[in-house]
Image 1: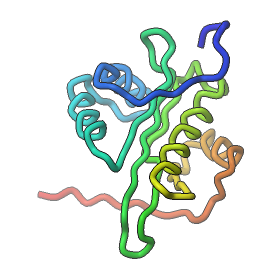
Image 2 (image 1 turned 135 degrees about the horizontal axis):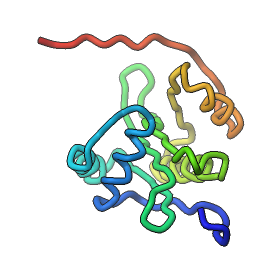
Image 3 (image 1 turned 30 degrees about the horizontal axis):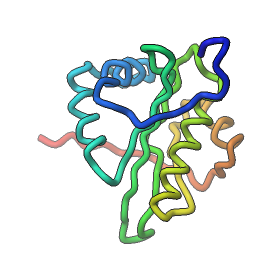
Image 4 (image 1 turned 90 degrees about the vertical axis):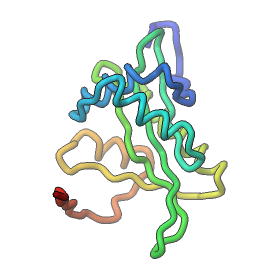
Length: 149
């Protein structure tokens, strides 16, 4: 962020953010091309049950957050942060907190009063971040993947 800016101000993602969202995904360890990200972002932006917010500084994105509403048989309707990335040079600047607050406001507008997030155990820096902004650890779990032939 520039020296003159104050608090990061998130906005809804747009299609022209695809390259920067892809860059940040790659930084997090999930490589994606601009074209791949544009296809994904198009689906997310057009869906009413999910949203992506970004914080920009000039032509660069400092971070993005993805939030999704889902309905499950066991818990009903709930909201979950499905991705949060802050550029390595912008961490501890308030960007992550501002993005989470934007997601929380969006969730409230959809009539819910809670939000969950899953954080990989290897992302050690994320755990104190979430706990520091009011998240409480509820459980740990294993994630399994089966490749289909």
